[in-house]
Length: 96
Image 1 (cartoon, rainbow, N blue to C red):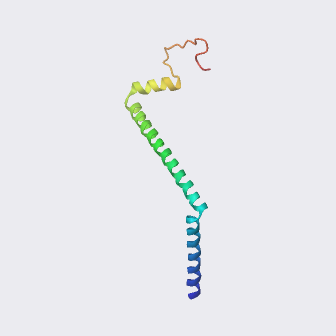
Image 2 (image 1 turned 135 degrees about the vertical axis):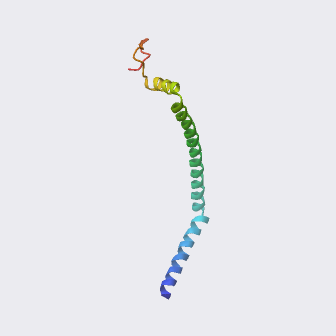
Image 3 (image 1 turned 90 degrees about the vertical axis):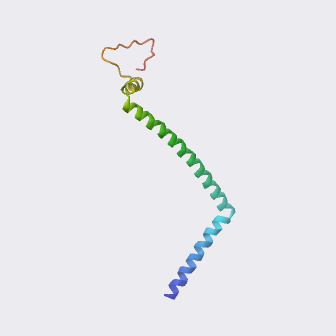
């Protein structure tokens, strides 16, 4: 049992030494700086995504409550027409 405690203690000291070496060595500090920069970039990306989600939720709510807005979005984005409407192609203005 005593040998197991000594082995565990030595392993713990080695692990601590490796962590401290990485933390305070030049390459460790560079890696930490790189990781912190990556974290900052990812947080900015998250903020952008949160803004997009907020805008899309607003659009979703508007489309679910306003039939005219829903019809306009369908007509503009999907090219849907009423049965009595006619489309005139003015020299290739409409995608085929």
